Image (cartoon, rainbow, N blue to C red):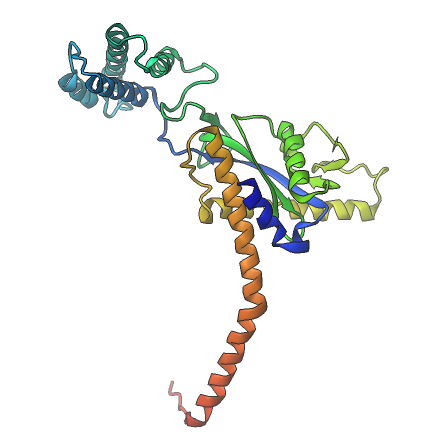
Length: 329
């Protein structure tokens, strides 16, 4: 996948060889539903029943009718009259999940291969609302809860990714996935190292937002962060130049938007941490290839289309009859 991404940078030629870059982070959401404790406990019951059926274990009770009744009690939990009933139903479902896990532990043989699954189920049952490193999905336990301050989406469940963009041409020269939710400033050294490996040279300047506060220089790369200018240290020309760079930094935001809407970064369907790394590399490579295809289209096909339109116009023109149209008001 890295070779595909590197080739997408190479085909863009000199456009991908700029020494000034823009860096930003975003969240790559995983293919999971919005997690709640009640959902996870019901999934544990479903998975325990599937294991029992597969291993021909006859459990004491299937809880089919009980769960249906408890599901009715869980509805409309925000209504003042239903809050207590819903809370009791949640507690009962959690108790049933614990019973099934303990019964499977007693009945299953030691080498059955379900030990890891049962340990994961027990962790979900033991975790509390205020705990750190919580499990939000049974099939994707490495998912993290990330808040980027968006008004329409308070929490996102996935992992953090870093995107590096050339300042003028807009070629993506870095796309790196990070497990969990690290601080933006801590992702910068690894992202710049990846940019150097893929392009063959070190970026001289990197323009970021204020989320990268902490370091003004990493190796030989100067980090530009928007801040109040010191009038004694910077000339008017230098201030104007930096202002232009900070304005240009905003160009990474629509790039990330197109990666998500047009190149399948909005929802990651690949499995595990390896799948996170694969998805961002392929999305960035697709965008670079698309950019080059559009550039070739503009160079070769659009002039031919214009020429064809002119020829058609002159061929049809003799047959057109001009008539005066009287306008009545």
